[in-house]
Image (cartoon, rainbow, N blue to C red; front, side):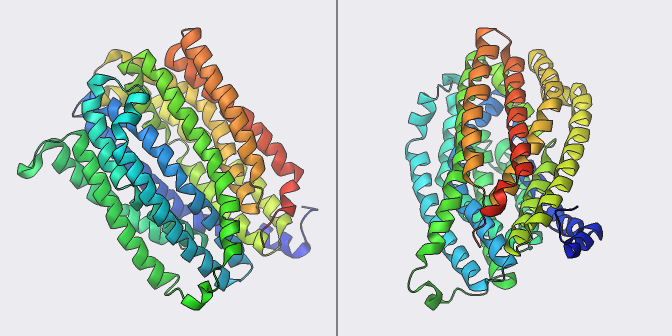
Length: 455
């Protein structure tokens, strides 16, 4: 505590910062849970339709999620700048950032939508999607891709509301969207109420419609609860500095996430070489293990907002102490959930599929994932925290180097060269997450991030 001023000692010891984390993280936790359930709903409902549809949609989503990460360029920059400007009480700059972000995300989203829709077949062919999965994968790719711009806009709107301590509203929107998607999936995947039985295509239609509803609701909440209007005179002359800061944060930050998603696409290509069973087992496992790091995502995103506010208020030492508290909480929660999930594996997988090979692979993966999640919890918390404090480039450089050398390189070596299969690849992911975790812990304790604020 010697690093913290007397006043901030009292604030932290009195629990004010912990209360702030709870108030921000709990709505984010519920929203993230609902977002994960949105994706898991498609997978689990399709599992009642066919294993091939699950494998095809899981394969396509790796590519679509990579495209969605392009939208993080805007969303990440919006979150960091809005949090710091709110802490510094610079309301005009906050409005400028949100206005620029909405316009930029719309343009980027439309460009990505055109690329995914028009190039869907070529992309899936290049990535090596098996011909027997193309009938399910291509329609899903075209429909979800055509409406990708909706995700770009909603991510930016959600980021601005969260940074302003209004995470409750994106949570409510996500709840509504989940209910709509659930009913849409039931009707369109299985052909209920006289509708055609569309399978993966039906899941894509339902998901895209739900995203459209989300954009409308988020716009309404933004205007009524946060920014009622965007005065034209605030954008004349055009605030180039805010656009520059937005891209300065967003490009390298999104670059790290795009690198991660690209590495996962390459790894998916490797897994495709193992067969449909491995692809399907991975799709099931990815949707299950998301629940292991659900709380760490909420704590990481909520903690980043609090740290951004503290940095904006020029209380970097309090941010340092708060970071030590947040990471301990994140690791503990993640470990408990991942253990419970591993113990439940032999009961969960038979519910999803009757294929004994998929069940056996899935159970082994969940136990390997217990140790993997320890590193992931550290990465999620400190990457978010370092970005929020303005330390952007370090996370990107470390992420790209370690991901490609360890995760991609060793997954090929363990999984294909040594013949360890999907379990060997998951062990490579374990090493990747924990190596990066150790590096980011040292970075936080080194305090070099304290001199990199944008305010």
